[in-house]
Length: 117
Length: 110
Image (cartoon, each protein chain N blue to C red):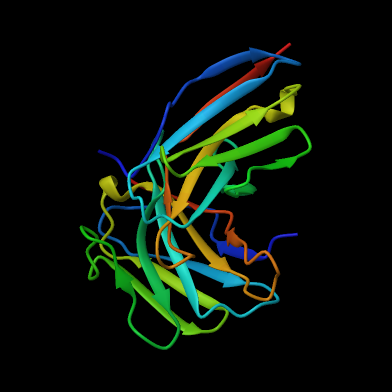
């Protein structure tokens, strides 16, 4: 079963509104989570690294005031797309590593498809 | 130059065929290598890690050539269910921070 859960799976919103996406690690604690974005026919691009109890680390070119990240607990990170515009329409995916597993595998959430009208 | 480069394909092969994908990476300090599979509109899922000695998992064989900085994935006896996009993934430094290739699309047909 899923070890990382994302919600919502789909969201359609009007331009100018804000959208929050949740990422939860199930049955394990994740001090670090990663947020990716994927445009059609393109690779996943790392947006930011979410750190529990501290500020997120953003990749070059990603606006931190536009994409607010909050990692308030060891099992939950949220990404808020503020004042969304049509160009923000994309597939947003979070990931977390279960260090308790011998493989240390990185698991991905199911993804959240955002469409901004 | 992209950090991780893959031929986007698509590779159209008949069932039962053997198909190979290559991937090159630019950072010689890269430490960990993976192949992920991504189905249409779904999240990526780990297919296999890639080790220097090469590794095999059933019909799938992965190899790493550090000197030439490329990774390969071989799929034998292709099944219809193998149709997907295969992502070459490289990690440099922090093991959890991954860089993805654009993916190679495989379509297996009857």
